[in-house]
Length: 85
Length: 405
Image (cartoon, rainbow over all chains, first blue to last red; front, side, top):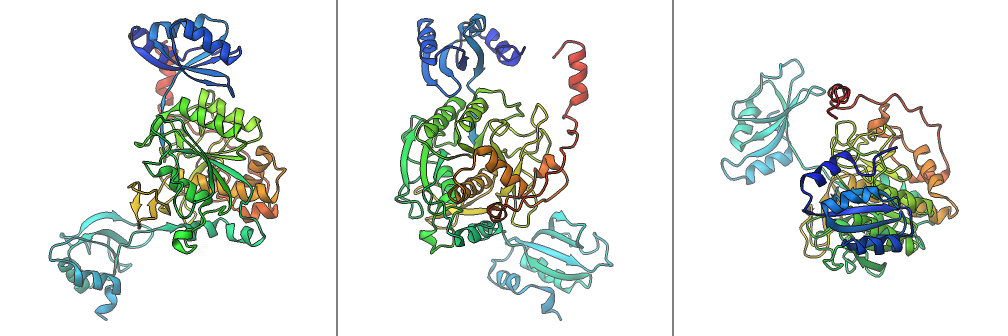
């Protein structure tokens, strides 16, 4: 079973636990419910994506890392840059 | 005899050029002469060809005049810039024959998820009927990329008397701005743009964007694209511009269910920059090529993307430019055959593509041809070969074996 957080991203989160990071949290519950739970934990919810479902957040790296322990969290990814091709 | 060695257009350029100004030339030597024999020290060589006995470089008018007297030289040409106008690339993929059959994309909605679209461009005016900004900058296309892409997919060529007409010139356009004026954005903004396009019932979504690095299609942006396909929406996605090495298709080009598009030129050669497969998990991508080299299409007002042709058009290259050819093609086919599912559309396009080369990781199943697809002229697909070795594969295996990776 793949890790909920990619090893490279997790290592970065551990290196700078206080830093605010942008992340995409994929969830196994209703995304609005997940957004509420994340907001309760102090995350700034930027977007809720229902197609996947996922919640886009900004939160401290340490808190982001801790999300992997939640059963309703499927994965936590870095909200990476994209560009024109 | 003397004049035959210098092309007329080059002669005119030499006559007008100030003394000492370098001119780009191609020098053809006589077949029996060795490569180095005609290379005047003053010729700044940029390329030596093997297929033809020729050398490309820069030279002043004086140097060219000296080359003209060189008995080893057969001909000197001006090295002209090469353009694939929409009036070349669109016929190349068979669109005019489909227009002639009565299909121009009318009634089909294509969504351009990009840098925004100039809704007042004469080629698009009145057909960009729904817009949404996810970038936080406001919808205006202050980069130019999205307008260029929209023009290739669905421009009607009004500002060029039809010369730069896009593939589906009567399609309806929805546009989501997910990339800022510097051409960059976040994966989550793209996910929001794709979701919005699905909610608005777009039938084809164009994504001429991507992230860096090889991927396996499991990331959230790729998963969103696959979910959109599951909702019945066709997604055409750029493979990336990280070629010519293998394993260079980024996200969301690596998404399983989308049609991933690489770039060819107007001679049906793959471009060197076009990203090559396989994906990180060794699947075939890109599946298809479309023209994406020096494409002239709509220029957004006040922008400088590409090489401007005039106030209404600009030239640009990339898999970004190849992808909207595929999007326009899908619009034509969906008008002609509205019941096609995304998978059926994908199967039809790859099955009717013109085979360009045996290396599927580079060429996919070939260059798309909408007329052959419209006619249903499909061929059986070749088997997918064993994937090429990964770059640094041995080193990675050693690192894994000793627990460092």
